[in-house]
Image (cartoon, chains in turn yellow, purple, blue, green):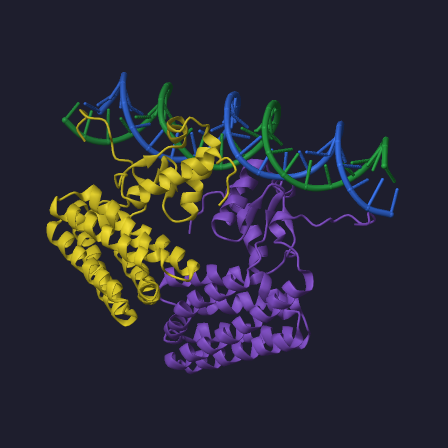
Amino acid sequence: MECRPESHAERIYANLLDGLQTGAFAADHRFVDTEVAAQYGASRMPAREALLRLVAEGYLTGSTRGFVIPTLSLGEIGELSEVRRLLEPRAAASAAGNMDPAVRADLDAAIGRIRDALENDDLVGLMRANVVFRNIWLAAVGNRTLAATIARFMDRFTPIRRGTFEDARYRASYVAGLESIHAAFMEGDALHASDAMTRFMFDAEAAFRAVRAHELDTVRTPPRATRTRPEKEGRPS
Amino acid sequence: MECRPESHAERIYANLLDGLQTGAFAADHRFVDTEVAAQYGASRMPAREALLRLVAEGYLTGSTRGFVIPTLSLGEIGELSEVRRLLEPRAAASAAGNMDPAVRADLDAAIGRIRDALENDDLVGLMRANVVFRNIWLAAVGNRTLAATIARFMDRFTPIRRGTFEDARYRASYVAGLESIHAAFMEGDALHASDAMTRFMFDAEAAFRAVRAHELDTVRTPPRATRTRPEKEGRPS
DNA sequence: TGTGCTAAATTCGTATACGGTTTCAAGTGA
DNA sequence: TCACTTGAAACCGTATACGAATTTAGCACA
């Protein structure tokens, strides 16, 4: 690990990334470089560097009125899901073979937090606990490049995952899938882990598509990136 | 396609990316933001934006004395190869199902350029033709996210690929693999394309590892990113 | 001839300013 | 009341300058 002082740009990037990974920002949040700079006590340049890095990594999209969180189309949900199904089953199998006592304990704690969040209808907690759970099993994957790539693709689904969590039935189903994966990890069974992950991913994709299709039916608006919704109250539209 | 005028940063990025994809830069080339800016008639900020984007995408690594091309360790060669083997066989199978006359013609032309470059010991031409060939079959992959991800991972091997091309036997073997893939595409046989791609990737990985191991034996130096090799003549070291 | 120290050079990170483009709000006219 | 036009505001892209940290080169001494 490096001990050199962290730059403004790196600090801002890490903070924004955490928020984007855990669904802390509203889907229509706009990141304006002057605002971000002011928020972190820096100037536009390091804020801009952090924002552009998030753009390069797929977390944000630039527009003439700030940077926004991209919304996955139905096609993109399908494509990203196919790529993930090529990677995650094997990664889960690999992780299943690395289940030492410390990893098992961490996974037990994480699934406990997921159960609590589900029981309390705590969406924020569920989003966070989901990230913790995935980070634990990904840390057990020997191939670090594979783990990092999977994490990056998982993050792309943060906004739509948050959308599915708003529905109690989808929440319960998602957690049931995680329970199955957790059981496979506890057994240390590579085949079971791979199969559980595959099944979970098909179910998750179906939920994502259903929620997205519903959103498209409900709002029937062009993509948000080219429109900024009025934020001030009072003026009728 | 967008017709809005291209920014300095985008123009510089596209030019540097092309060079990095085709192996136009020496492995020890240093990209200094003031030099890049001067080269493209711009200021440091757009040059810096382009360089930082290439860092975020894995093409460059930052240091206190400029940006450099990362050198893959043996472990990284293994990890990246495993990830690619999870993605490319399926992508090749998908492409094999999309072999319309135009794609076939383009692939024929591309393999022709590869044969010419091999016969003429034209390394620069071979590097370029290899990129052309892969871009053609990747364009035939239905899942655009999968295609883009594969292209990104392929680019990571550009420096070591150039290293293998310096040896005539590796060059011939690499092209033999491409011929086999080309034949499978011409047959439109998904299974054959997948198998040919898998075999080719194991062979390519073996060559990459051999060349890298040889480099490590020959130079026995610490990673280049933390050392700048003297470039000026005359002063004995 | 080699090593160590010091000063200069090189590069990056960041701050500030300016101009251009896009968007929005307000006012006027029909 | 609605639509159109104009002006202002908001934001991005880029240029320039400054300071800090790191590296290199040169000189002196042993």
